[in-house]
Length: 187
Image 1 (cartoon, rainbow, N blue to C red):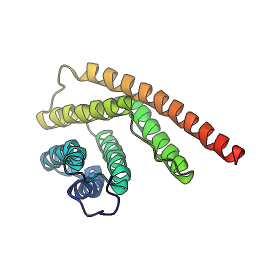
Image 2 (image 1 turned 90 degrees about the vertical axis):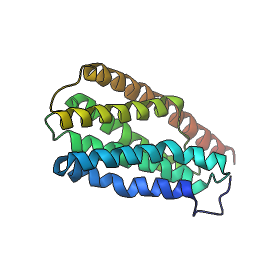
Image 3 (image 1 turned 180 degrees about the horizontal axis):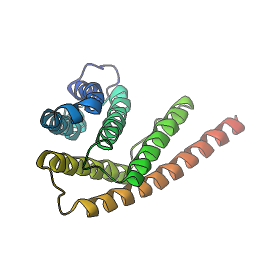
Image 4 (image 1 turned 180 degrees about the vertical axis):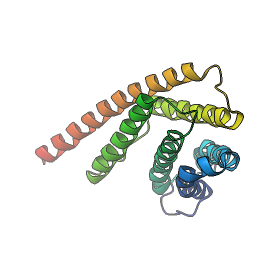
């Protein structure tokens, strides 16, 4: 891991995603087509920043923190933006996503405080990917003006992944905290 150089292409891509994501809060309603274009752009940067970091040996501590933060800001911004539109996710799904993201953010801050760098899980990555696919579908619905066929199935898939990844992160967080507390007691 190259922790000395923070000025890398992957870090720039994550930082770009972090900066652009809050604009979805108003842009989705103001100009859905521009918002959709930016969504595609930030989705591409999300797909490639980690790959580029590994291929160019530029994985950094900053990147390991910045990438998931950018993901959370994107997911939360889009969730809040889409809850206000005609074609939006069910309120219960919105609340599940919100609870999961806030839990992960707070849990990560707590773990970092104790010197543990949280790592993404496979289920967490699937949940994030499924949410990105859902937002793609919601963009299409709101641009075209009608409900797409598979959207109800997508709500269910996202809901399952959100709940399962929440439970997995809860398990990981509890195990990490037990390890930290055991280590402190043994000292």
